[in-house]
Image (tube, rainbow, N blue to C red; front, top):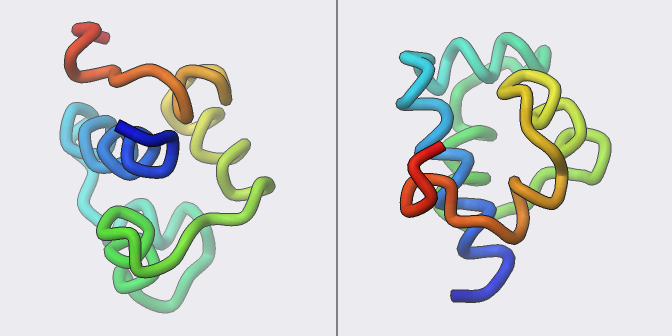
Length: 76
């Protein structure tokens, strides 16, 4: 699995694990709609580096974990 696929999978997994809706995460990022988050998770677009760092803060993980570790398989 490539890094972008791992990151997309992790974004979806962490959001669901924490009980967050796409609307909640969109609001956290000051986006008008959940569609931005939906596009990040589906691979239609990618978050900026700044948004990746903010995702790490939201979920209390490192950037390396977000990009390189399949967190669901790792049980985190």
